[in-house]
Length: 203
Ligand SMILES: N[C@@H](CCC(=O)N[C@@H](CS)C(=O)NCC(=O)O)C(=O)O
Image (tube, rainbow, N blue to C red; front, side, top):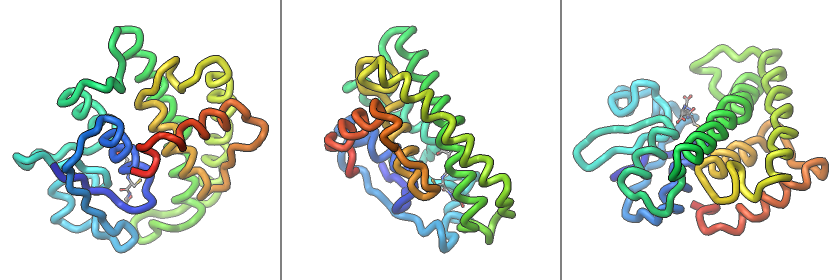
């Protein structure tokens, strides 16, 4: 398998961490130059019509993009350690948190970054006012996460799941928009220290 990734980008980090947590080795990681527009070229678009990383390319040439679809594929080919839940309730709760994180934290952080930094101004029209609003929306999710982590060791309950990966990749990318895990959020701080100690942290 090949993973099309990019340095510093939070979306492919989710896939690299999931591979590491699953102990799946031997995947060739190919770094794409996003700032230089390598992902916009026809050769890359053939792998993902959305022109984004990550893309997981299977040995038969099938290309899977979208971080959550890659989580699903990895879970199917290697069920243990389990990251997406075992029971109906556990699967639903993990997916609920993963979607909340994507929609209420990951996406607004990305929108704030893109619309206030102009990083992708060659391919979109940045609207600074919208970027600032998106940054505020991302900040509003932190108390929700804090409350959850006051009651549970991990984001979706009492064991590690993909929701922890999505939360970590989102929050750490949040630094680019000055979103900080301040002392107002001691449960997130405790969880974050725990995440940093996992071998997958540096994947
Ligand atoms: N919904 C996609 C988002 C992928 C995404 O936004 N990737 C960013 C990097 S974090 C990208 O490739 N951006 C390149 C661009 O927008 O030109 C997923 O979950 O994988």
